[in-house]
Amino acid sequence: MEQTTSSGVYFGLDITDRYALVSFYKPNMEEPETISTVMGSEVFQIPLFLSKRRGMGQWFIGQEAKNQVQAGNSDGIDMLLSRALHRDNVILDATEYPATELLLIFLRKILTLPGGYFGSSKFEKLVITVPVLDMEHMELFTVLCTQLGLDSSQVMFIDHKESFYYYVFHQRADVFYQDVMLFDLEDNQLIGYRLHRNANTKPQLVRIETNNFGTLIDNKDEKFLFLLKPTFAGEEISSVYLTGDGFDGNWMKQSLQFLCHNRRVFAGKNLFSKGACYAGYRKSVSSEEWPFVYMGEQELKVNLSIKVLNHNEMQFISLLDAGENWYESEFSCEVILDGTKEIEFWVQRPDSRQASVEILELKDLPERENRTTRLRITAKPVSDRSIRLLIRDLGFGEIVPSSNKIWEHEISIAVQE
Image (cartoon, rainbow, N blue to C red; front, side):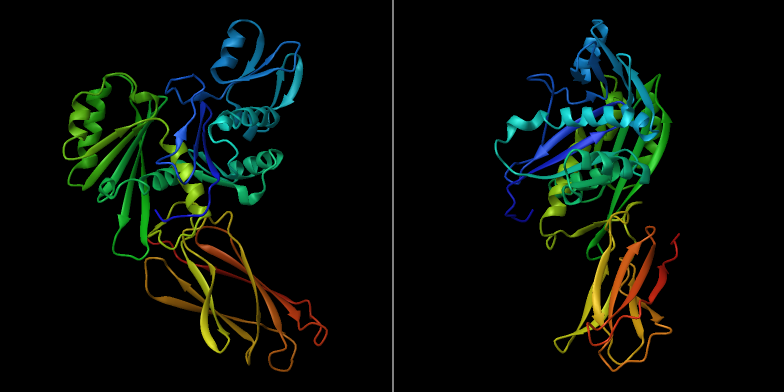
């Protein structure tokens, strides 16, 4: 990992409908640290449960909130994430609250937990990771983070697969010299993630394949082994990670023996929150030495650039880069036309050295002297494979007024089987 001048703190928040985990990381730390609400323990999962003390404005979270409800002192609510996504209203202590407001209270409390661990260090970024990221999650957490006083540069949203990616590539190289598997067992549901790195591309493209193995309840050791054998048959896998409550207990016998044969096996519950910390750090420092690009569902699958003449030197300006989150990416620049009414856009897949050229003709652009037309080009993805271009005629200051014309164009690449 390259050195960075940043000395701030990066938070990783792993949140599902059942629990939340919060980790933090500073560049001088060997690895992120995860907070436990139980002093001296490694119980990292904080139940996504909130309660309010009856007749008072006192709120509790996690296991303490459950204990208050069991003691008859408080009214409580669970499944805060799904309730907030559905914009439900909830009645607690005879008062109706929007579920989004209750989730905000939970987040405020959970994000104060690491406060005493890093003194006066500056807050850098909060990265929230969820099992599956979609626009609804993005919109909800964007609003909540704004209410927490964070601006867009201080927050980032990723899914569990991308957390897995960042976690793996901050480990020693012998962990990922071949493919890496992760098995997540929660609520008896077994999900498998297989991380594959293409060492022949530059940067190296990383993809993660998901496999839903269904439920794992009775005879778990035998059933898990039965699923493992075809999954690993003939495959080169150097390491395996096991996460989730389902791996608690001492039930793994034959399956663990199978996994450990010529492979490294790791178990824990805070991989995703630690990976989120690494994601925040990696996105905030220079990435020149970072040799990987992750190609997930949220990541753009195309590089887009234009060729310009800058100080008598022909250069490519990158508008959008493959591997960036397409929800959040946008780029604008201004150019001056030189002897043409066309703009050439260079389109390239990240796994190819060949680029195609799409030419956009600026129809109905007013006739002007050469180099007196300034344009603003805005590129905004509409999916992981499509980019919408907006080109606006700005004129040329007071010399040439703008025509107010706008050209729109969409560039797409086909899905590769």
